[in-house]
Image (cartoon, rainbow, N blue to C red; front, side, top):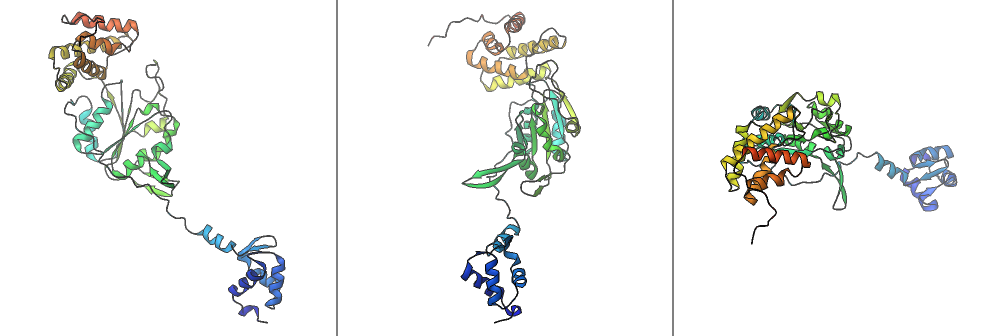
Length: 366
């Protein structure tokens, strides 16, 4: 019989597989000991890498162990066609307020998180978009809701053509592209937004699901817009807004308080829009701007509970381009308010404009 020291492991496993199969017990060890003129402990020790339990061995266990301990393959990443994310320039855009400061921050290329707060419909988001458009900078906008979570922002695994692949979220896309990340309506977020803490420090993020660390490319920065300052809405006007974590808010370097544009600026905005729509009426634009400004002043003094936003004025101009009547355009756009507020707004406008037509229910003839 051959001595154990001269026996090749392949010969030993071949003998056992031929006589007992790939899965075997102590009887196979005993038989191998007799065949190779060796002791039970020596054969057992030589086959230690195949042991799967008490008195049980498997010749497939070695391959399983090698597979289990092998370096994990890089997870597949979904290949997404790169598109140009620079916003289009709007020829009707009129800059005002903090626009020049926001533009300077973006053009500097410095990572400098900015929080912009202000009443609804006063151009917060539009201003950021146009700043990027003028600078030729890519912008990735994310509309935040109470449901927004880490998977929505950072990314996660998706099923692509029957296979699981990693899909970058908008935050990772902005990081890698050096784009401006716009977090719109940030005060609607839950505490799940805290996944952005390290990113708000300019340090990038470690993707724990893939083991990859993503560093911010040059030019990456974050701008957040909100109707509140992240402290909730005391008057209930912006229902659904939340009190944001103080540590989260503290990571924004500065806060801009955006007001509505002045009547002159607002008149210019309306004139540009109405000219584009083919219904330029400079007098109507001037009176609308004055009307909205006076309502806002009354609102600040507590005289009314609603305001006319710049966005709503543009709605009125569009309605005017369709119906051709000043009062009807105003009416259909203020119907969203309660009856008392609507009537007071329309009555006030009627007093400052002696050219308004009476609104009736008659349909235009065809």
